[in-house]
Every structure is written in C-alpha cells, then in structure tokens.
Length: 205
Image 1 (cartoon, helix red, strand yellow):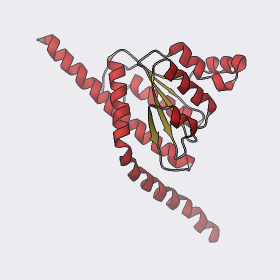
Image 2 (cartoon, helix red, strand yellow):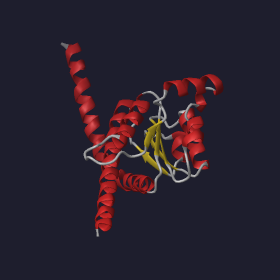
Image 3 (cartoon, one colour):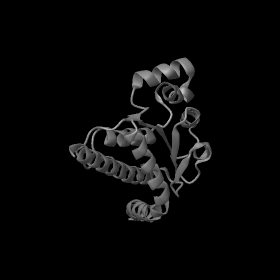
Image 4 (cartoon, helix red, strand yellow):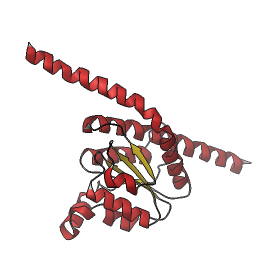
C-alpha cells in the first residue's frame, strides 16, 4: 500500500510542477516575441535558423527545426531551418577529427552567415559544444538565442536573447522548451504567411 501511494505521487507531483512552471512562462512573453520577430525577419530576408543541443535537447532541436521546414499549423512554403544534430556522419566525423566539443561549432562555421539565427538548447547551459557553437555564431554575425533551465551557465551569457526556464528539473525544463518552441513556430509561421499574402496582393495589383 505504501509503495502504491509513493508511485501515485509521481503523477501528481509531475502534473503539479508542470502546471506551475507553464503558468510562469507568460513572464517570458517579451523574449519569446523578440525571438519570433527576429526569426521572421531573418527568414523573410533569405536567412536561416540553426538549432542544436545534446540528448533530449537534440531531439527538441530536430522537432522544432522540422516544424518550420515542414508545417506547424498552416500550408505554406518551407522555411530554412536546420538542426545541427541531424547528420550522424558529419557529427561522428567532426568528433573523430576535432573532438566532440566542436561537433556544432564546425557546422556553424560552414553554414552560418551574418543575419542568421542560432538557437542553442541546453538544460544546464553548460554544454561545451553548444556554448562553442553559440560563440562561433556570434563571431559570424548571427543572432544568438539560448534556451536553458534556471541556471543558464555560459550559454545564457553568450546569447543576445536568453529564454530562461525557471526550473532545475530536466524533465520539466524540456516540457517547457517544447511549449516555448511551438509558440515561436506558430508566430513565425503566421507572420511569414501574412507577409507573403500581402506581397502577393500587391503584385496582383
């Protein structure tokens, strides 16, 4: 019976902490809007969004990059969005030749241009390979976004905009990542679609 009570508390505790954290995210709205506006401008000007992270954050990077390349809620042309953790051959090759700490920065060096947006995702903010990629992106003139937990470490300080999830629990932080990412994707998709519609109307006369 005691064991059952302890197990039941897993669900109740997770739901309670999740709801509390999600309600706190509204405080991040100005930063989320800043990131979404910057991404929109970049895409409209022919730039791209680069995403990276390790482990669960790598999966989140792939998920969010795919929302822009494919579709989130609306049918529209694909958007230039790349997850730097997708190409296993590239990652393994760089890790073998230069070390794991350079698996993202080497790709940033090859792909990033001035005006692009780089998004580094790390629950601790201390992932050396993500921090190195963020610093490289800044040197190349990209706009750098950090999405981290409460203690954003070096990644947060390297960013132009730092979205700081107010939690120290990895699972809760990752749940909040996805909501933030989905809201940003929704905004960007709508803003770009509205801009394209206005341009089409002007061209039609």
